[in-house]
Length: 231
Ligand SMILES: Nc1ncnc2c1ncn2[C@@H]1O[C@H](COP(=O)(O)OP(=O)(O)O)[C@@H](O)[C@H]1O
Ligand SMILES: [Mg+2]
Image 1 (cartoon, rainbow, N blue to C red):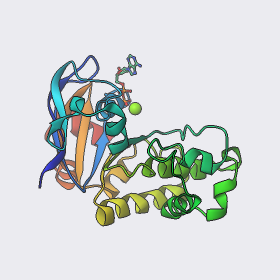
Image 2 (spheres, helix red, strand yellow):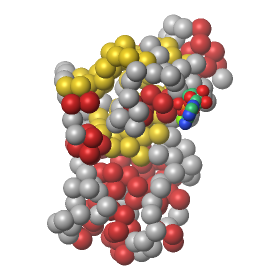
Image 3 (tube, rainbow, N blue to C red):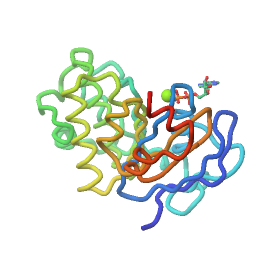
């Protein structure tokens, strides 16, 4: 297996010791205390920030070699808040940069199906949607670009359990059936144990531990991770 994203000796003012490889078609969880640098790490992966030292590559080439628009379509990000703009669901979905020209409502319907929302929602104003529905629209909007990699920063943290389950199912399906690569920050350790196969543990800005999720949870090697897992 080839890594789709690889970080070598990466450091900036907020993170250090960042070295990892993410394999295509896997789901990686990022865990660690609040303020440990999880979001700062994720921001490096679609060039919201750049390393001061070291290099991050995407499909074997430095990320900085790609036009930034192309890179951000290929590596999509979803945040804790849906960040939709005023207008209908369809307005938001067709915002995807590659879709503005030849948008077809059928595409909107298939995107809504993907996130298990009814097709008549396409013409609704987003302000009338629940938080969970809005978050699924945000996910659908990112999927509209057909990204290879999805970055999720606490994307399910503000949602009710039923919606969390729906989204977890969807993520699993994106990985196993479509071969997407997902990197997901979560502060919910139960969630991190439920989903994903690889885990990165951030502590005080440092990538302290990484590995197969089961091994990492069952046999933490660093003092910091042991403490963190004990809560
Ligand atoms: N916009 C910012 N400017 C400067 N420092 C920041 C900014 N955002 C976060 N930080 C600092 O960077 C460190 C890591 O934060 P962050 O990556 O948000 O952690 P986490 O996502 O794990 O909670 C913290 O010390 C935080 O105070
Ligand atoms: Mg964060």
